[in-house]
Image 1 (cartoon, rainbow, N blue to C red):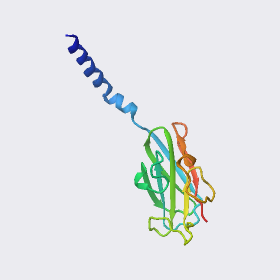
Image 2: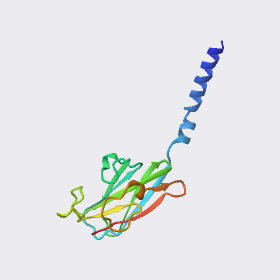
Image 3: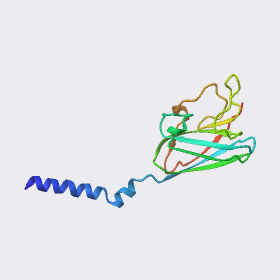
Length: 151
């Protein structure tokens, strides 16, 4: 009888842990607002990718947890990423002025279009690491501004 009581207790515990109230309280509910600032014109689109860990950062948007694109607005474009859990994230973006969905470079590999990376607001000689670009998202910290850098 004790084995049956143990099994019943386990089933009851599992059922109460999966009730809608408990599932809802564990759901991610943070919305992150990202302002991409410093666009030099209104040509093309701004493409943005949000990464939860270093996999694929900064240029493999297929490994990003979210990606979005909006028409360039000459100045600032605002993005919203919903249903995030607290933690570290990093953003990479591109001002895709010619709408070909890739970073255009000159023959030396220097970008012809603007890029935006969280925590990076100056010209860099190589792609920054996830660690350098990472920022914390929490209930209190859910807004971020990043600047487009042009060479």
